[in-house]
Amino acid sequence: HLYSSDEIPFTLGDHNTDGLLIFPASLPAEEIHRQFLIDFPMVLVQQTPPDGLPVPHLLVENKNIACKMVDHLIEVHGYRRIAFLAGLKEHQDAAQREMGYRQSLAAHGIPFDPELRAEGYFLRKEAYEAVNLWLQQNVEFDAIFACDDFSAIGALSALNQAGIRVPEDVALVGFDDLEIS
Image (cartoon, rainbow, N blue to C red):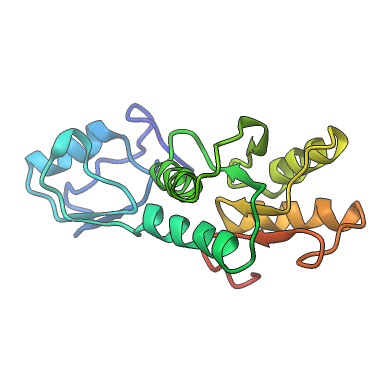
């Protein structure tokens, strides 16, 4: 359950917690700021500190990795119509992955086509529906870069249902390396 600052069921750090690993959207910025002011031990995982606070944080090189993935699709396999299933708008990882996607396209002289971008929201069902919509609208693509593996799984389901073979007809890549992948 994700809590807003007025819903937190207990006061973190006050006699009941030794430290925090804080994942994206799991704790409001106000609470992170409060914990910082009382020198409470915490590390942010996959997010930068709010308001530039000097809080330790761990980040995945999302932009560079995404760029290299799209570079591979273009340079090794020759794909030019690479569709993109985006993640959550407010999610820092999703934004970085999209920046990497766009950077690779630009570096290879491929203009960004908004028709090839859809919301996957890091969810199977939404990605499935987005790919189905592309197929219904006869959007041409030879590869799909899904912002995460759950979206890739949803895309794979839609392609399979339409009789499109992966990777023979359309290439598909996801991001995160989940066990099911």
